[in-house]
Length: 325
Ligand SMILES: NC(=O)c1ccc[n+]([C@@H]2O[C@H](COP(=O)([O-])OP(=O)(O)OC[C@H]3O[C@@H](n4cnc5c(N)ncnc54)[C@H](OP(=O)(O)O)[C@@H]3O)[C@@H](O)[C@H]2O)c1
Image 1: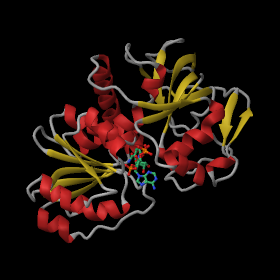
Image 2: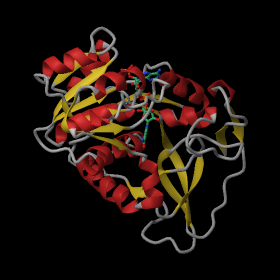
Image 3: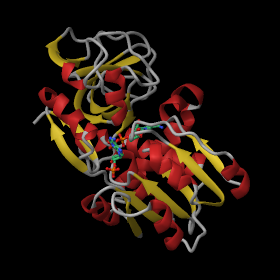
Image 4: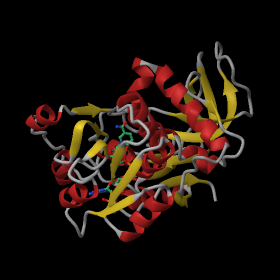
């Protein structure tokens, strides 16, 4: 089978497309013929060797796939050969076939294409668990989303609106902000041309946001934290800007606010029911059309480096997906 391989940690340009043996499965595992693989910022970090997990070399990036089950190992219940499923992975999705633990694949909602299904787990899963399970966002509360047109950002905008919040989307370009508006944002802040801190003050009459969803970090964190509301929750999602910020914790004291972390994938080890419950809700909303991921671009396996470059160069609006043309 074909697979995109990282043979040494470093630049994404070093990835190669190679022919490798089809993986074999053991007890408790399933093999899936990959039809589409979602591309995420953590794929870049994995290849650079700067992610929380360091796979043994060589490995394929790719943390979420949609496809058809082709083989089922002993002891796996509830799945069938040929079933359309979506699955998260530790890594390995940039390939024609993958092996996943039998507990991970979940059925794809009828109305979703493979590309759309592969765009849901990380972005929508992270945004949903963050907003509901970690921050307990309530209808009528104000939600500020940074990086609001990226993968997790746009999902947070759409889910925040669906959960009844007033959503303020913040991003770096007018096009990105207009997209966020289409996905449910009530107010927009262009942080390339205006001060996030001043605009937030004006938009909220000085009150700030009840929940802040931050996949960017760096300088934006420094500004946004100062606009957290009384008893607000600041969701630490990621550091796409490249800098992990430090928090002046007196702000948490003065505002009775919480800084709340989320490592979504870690729920597979610590409490997988959180991910399963969230995914069932996301699939139900997909079936009724209440959520629909936006596919920015689709690339074949041969275009994996270009796909990752879209994210690295900050061009993505929604999700990039790897799929056969
Ligand atoms: N905590 C978790 O469990 C979890 C799960 C998934 C992803 N993440 C993290 O969430 C972050 C976003 O992931 P994603 O897949 O949604 O990525 P993405 O689609 O590339 O979105 C990242 C956004 O960050 C902003 N950004 C600011 N500075 C940037 C820079 N120097 N390079 C690239 N983007 C920059 C961009 O928006 P503007 O141009 O509008 O600023 C971009 O839309 C990453 O840090 C990732 O590791 C965390």
